[in-house]
Length: 487
Image (cartoon, rainbow, N blue to C red; front, side):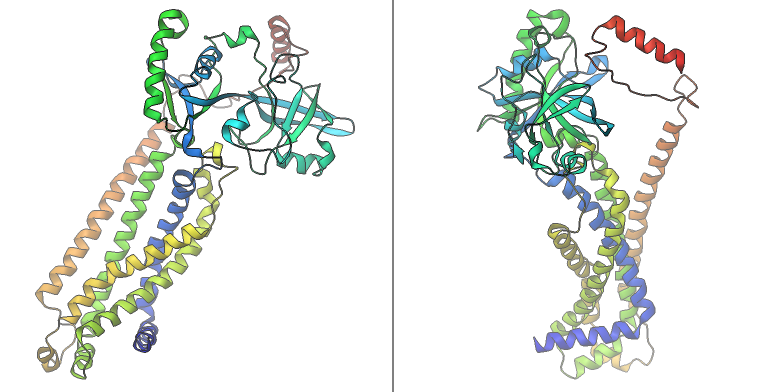
């Protein structure tokens, strides 16, 4: 420990004596380690961290593959959901949801538009989630005429109702209809909607549950213990073959029923992009290490006489290698600390890479996992860029160096190694530049794509009307025609 502390103190003195070199090395490491830590934090939060549900490895989503009609991940029809629910040998439970807009109003309060979900009564039990207050829906409440109950989010409960625990059991107005609040969801819980604040029962009618032509549901299931996703898909394939024969007009065009892990469903749009980003920042880190290794080789050429004198005074090769690796580790630790600050700053825009379904339950933060990864990357980097110079300088010829009066003579082998490092840097940089150029070109082509109509000054809007007031097609049509005339 005493000699190690001596190495640390000596290493710090050497770094302070070369402020230009130290600043260049720290900035290079800050970029390499900071970028790597920042992207890893996103990859960890989105791809590696388990979903905040009970036993999330057994949760799957189920969709319909209609690739030949342009819908490779089509939302399921109620009739198909009903069939999947009967596969009790495969699924412990199957639940369905449907995105919904609610108008919340009340006496003396401003009306407010809220997003939420209609859900089958077993949604929370399938996910393994318990309300913070109150209870879940019952099967009896998941029937037409009995569905006027609601679960509200913790955020809405706090913001709109002042976290009043007496709210459970009271009525609120949703879409001008009275709903009884039966519970408050846990903090941060939002299933499909990023801003979902309301859950109400799905309440399928028998006619709606038999419908195989309307595709609008989100379906998730919990696998039976010991059941794999592969076995579940095999059972779904057999079911599809049977139903395609029974209902050729509605089911015959579906290519597959697909079950996949729920986390894969949440992340399929960003997974490939995050993997590419992780590879890119890995290249950046390697470039940084090669760059600093080159700087250290150049610097070591000027220290050959110093190290030769230390060898003459009794220092062995292991001690010299340890000294140089200690200096490398000090630089890596400093670069890692600056990299953490850079990563924290990057969180401001990297949070946009988190899928909408996870944005409420997943947050970017410098937690223990990210800090441990950063420390590991810093130490690995110190070995990468410090080992080669340390081994080269430790192999000096004592008599030759002490006889030389000049400084900086590196010899052909050292020059060759430095040239190889430069070649590696240029090769890695070229890969990144070509990849970046192709991505920019693709993005430019997409922005310049002609959609077939003039997109300038064109707006879209989505409008939900209360079913109680506009319950039939004719009244809805009349209302929308009136709106268009006024607009």
